[in-house]
Image (tube, rainbow, N blue to C red):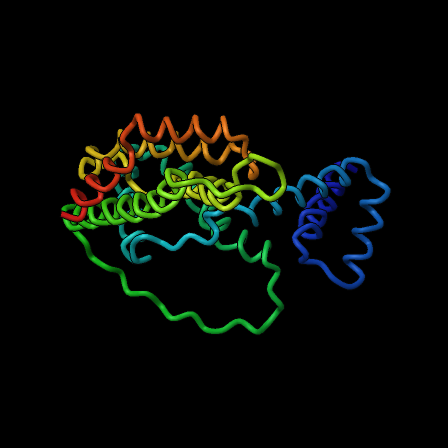
Length: 254
């Protein structure tokens, strides 16, 4: 009985992803209503898909062309096979599962309409030596750090300026936009590529300070208590962060 029940669990996952219709969907819905384990699995799958849909990485643009990433992954796989031949199957399996999830998860979350498949043009392999790839990674790391510093500077300059009065509470500060943008920037910082690269090592302490202050701003109430706001302003001033951010941006731009 357990073997046949595994088929239901597979259908429950497909149901949560919106991949069932007609009689198969109705039958699976009836089973979910009558089976406590499958109800729990169905709820967990829905929660996972909602989390994936909210992940900022879904909308992030790739920092380098896809063919370069393919070349890099292939080089690392080849190296793993040569150095650890007995682990080839586990490496290949892991990459296969990751590739399958990379393709299927966005499709399942967005639930596109069914259509006839279009022919996919083949991509010619791109040859790139290790030094060229290294130069590309350094360039990407510097460009991303500069863009992040510029966007963070816009938010923190507003925080450092004269506060706006909050219309909801007397003698409070309106930080609704700054608080929201700060949280978005903190989430975005996790997506930055290769910030441990030597080319951006000099700005790492500044980036850490920026992250700290942005977290402070993001934690404030949209209609902030003036004492809390002044504390963040003082922290920003004591660190001399705005000047450091300008200097670091200029250094990275070269």
